[in-house]
Image (cartoon, rainbow, N blue to C red; front, side, top):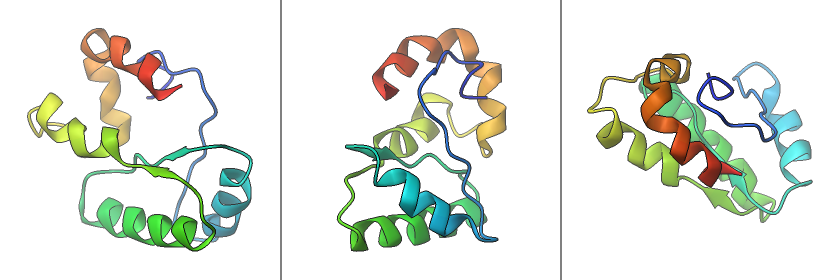
Length: 98
């Protein structure tokens, strides 16, 4: 979905079954990590877990897009996969992710 809205940076999928070690290792390669997980209950829990793990390793975390997404989509997006419906509107913002 991020590719559909024009984001062409590196994307790492994070899930609760073992992805945390990969996330920590990959995030260490970058100056900043943007956390953009689903906006449902599970996504909030995973975001909190990921943020805590990354903060322990002194990684810089960016939650700007996660915080702005509900207002930009008027609460209609609960899962990141749904972003492609907003392609025309969100493409200008995707350049900010890079």
